[in-house]
Length: 104
Picture 1: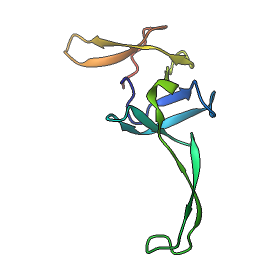
Picture 2: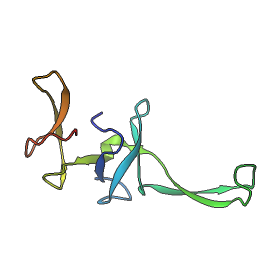
Picture 3: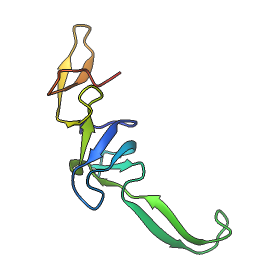
Picture 4: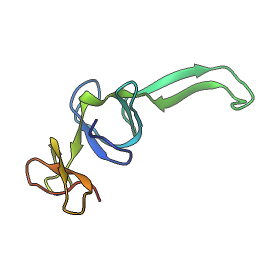
């Protein structure tokens, strides 16, 4: 999986197609990512110790990583990524369109 926390991604499939958001969490075992303000679902909850009021809560649900693409800061569009090993031995992600290093 080429995605990490705090990456900027664009949704390419599903009900939120075309939206851009930041990755909040990566769930490796299930091949899913949690993206800010994407795939918002409503959950009806009863009053309990944590939530005294109860009611309808909105939260993000994870989406499959294949439905999002990483955004390049230089191209300002979704791109495919390749891995490259630098001279100092560090492994970085590189944009396939402009060869810009994505990792800071």
